[in-house]
Length: 499
Image 1 (cartoon, rainbow, N blue to C red):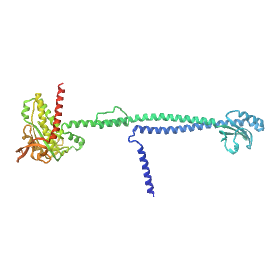
Image 2 (tube, helix red, strand yellow; image 1 turned 90 degrees about the horizontal axis):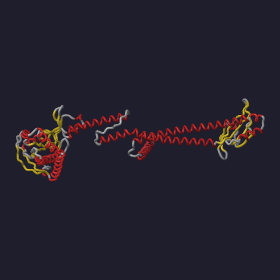
Image 3 (cartoon, rainbow, N blue to C red; image 1 turned 60 degrees about the horizontal axis):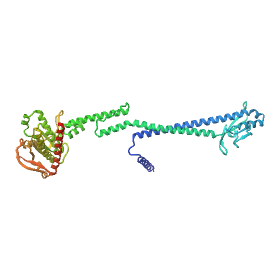
């Protein structure tokens, strides 16, 4: 029974909480939360303060009115002491009549020591006498308004010879109390309104650093690592701003390091290394990947006949084109070895089409070299030819070297075979191993002819090889579009440099 009641209570509380949450907007600014909280506290404080002041003032006004009534009653008692002892009713009647000329009095009366009514003018309570009342005043109501009757004893030395009573209207004091109440309520409302405005202004001031931090984090999320907050504070918000600046500076420094590192290793390797520096260690894993070696034909003799700066310009121009082709087909420049570029596909990022992408990249490199040679001949610059070897298979990929100097690369027999094939290729040729191009997912998408069995250095058996002439027509269309864009950009850059 107890558990059932508790469950019903929990369900009811949960329903109430859900209903309240459904009424609230999904996003409620912190400035509004602060403003409403401060306003509520100020409003409650002003209401309590106004109530206390109003009650105090009304009580003081009532006490002053009662003191005035008691004073009038005591003056009447003092004035009528001698006529009351002399039982001079005529004089008593004259005194009461003169007293009633005041507009504030509604009645007056005199009682003897036995509380017997001696004289009366105006309105008095009909059935309540001083002794029966038990107090010095009586609040009552006649047919038209509220009245208060005050009693004062007529004393001779220590003896009570009778009582005097006067009745005053409560209308003036009630009107004054109502006016005071309205004034206090009006002042309280005005002050509360001003307090609410000030509270929201203060809350906006307090929440502005939070909005600035939110803007900063949004900029950080958008990649703007140079965004900084100008405001300096010496409180907790200031410490939070300093922490943000330290974090942003660290991220900016890390981004710079990653960009510099990506020029020496592949961007994906650089990103993985910077993501967790503690995990950068020697080691590797066996993968299925593709390797392309693109080597300049006759580079040694060529470099002897031209200036070193011309050699550097030549290598940079052609290697820039190779880098574009590798990126276009999800390849990674593993390293540049003098006049040779080593490109891998399928590592460090998995690529189920690494073999086909490697072949497309090799063809694209040869097409790019042809277009670059035409462009350079027109400008009177030195041209070269590339020979390319390509192979797919199992290899070891990882950080290889020593603890103080390592390199992410691939090694293995499949890599060595690709290097040997590039040495056997002719100028402008792409030579691939038999096992790679005859695979079921590759053979229908390439154009090739058999080059024959080659004896490669380091191998006792002959290796069947093929010369790849092209790839699928749709792939070549995309390839030609990208080549045209690249050559157009080179020409635009050259024109800008001339200007």
